[in-house]
Length: 346
Length: 204
Image (cartoon, rainbow over all chains, first blue to last red; front, top):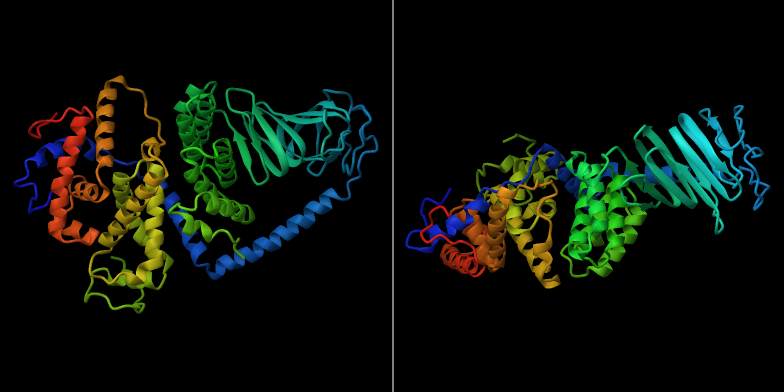
């Protein structure tokens, strides 16, 4: 352990200091292959960002082309849909206009079960468009001009909801969450009976789990997944799944009155969630930042959010956040790295 | 050592450096070479970083910064030392930089960082020793960074003073002086903090 030419010789403090440090010497960091791989990926991404290689440039070009295509497709999906005639009128569920229905989808009264085919779209009285994209069953609980409440039992439903007036609401419920929106394009998927995935393309949705987990807003480019984490925070804390651990930290943070503890719990939660997927991680870091913009870990959180945005390839948003970082944390040792992200990769 | 294509070095290296092949590939920006470098040394860099910063998250960050710096500045590696030594030197410098920044930013910053993301089950019998450990850690953190670096590298990482002089780019006599002072500081701070300080270095 110690040097052959022991500098402790002649120093009476050497054995005492060693004894004090013995406990620290036994501390071992948690290092495994998964951690190594995750760190290597992050490091590699930062290396690539510094010195873009040809394949990366090609990816960027393809990315732009892909975005353009996606934009055109989104417009094509959105534009031809006929808007409902009964705006503001409390149209009953029994008389909705079914737009572009390619099958004989039928709707009866509230509570009816509607089974979609793969390409079915349903125009709801509120003007919203619901489209089933991967099989499944939807209970229509309420469908009037002012209120839509769908209960998704299985499969996935994509929703395009025009901006709603005050008092209007649009909700999608699953076994584990209630997703409430105001003017947005989003999807809810029941991946398993106790696993709901919410993803947002446009606007904001509020995801309210039906248990101890915290209510969150999800914004474009983000996802929130709700899996079975047990009936309580304590149960989630015993889980080995990072998503449940993150939820537990978030719940503890929401309940904490100590700002330092809360900030640390938020950081831990986002760190745990960052091992799930990029779109989820982005949301966790954003929420941690917004919940504590001047907290003790603000710089760490802001930087991690930038990393997550890079992993999610959300370059424009990363550039925007990078600008804010440079401004807010001008003295940070990471500013030089972040400055290189202010301009999105071409 | 993995053999790789004999890419020309952009700078002269020490003659017959044992890692010359790898260094040549690194200089040529061979991605596989950087991955090899990472896999060989990342765990050690991480462990060393943890000695200086608070929490796995920050140690993770330092690991990335160290290998990013290696990527940026590999041409500056002249082969007078091993790659590991060079990486350790970068690690210590990065850790110092971070500590300085944290201290400027806020008093509580470093102490408030999370230790680990993993759950630590509540085990009453470990509380006392954990408190003791936390106090020793806090005392260590309060020692001036250059002295602390020497103490950590020697007592916890097991490097001899010649190697430490190499890491820190200073004379060995300076290392010895800093080491003696760091030990004295640690003992004084521990006593002030109420840590049970052994009289003779026996098990406390």
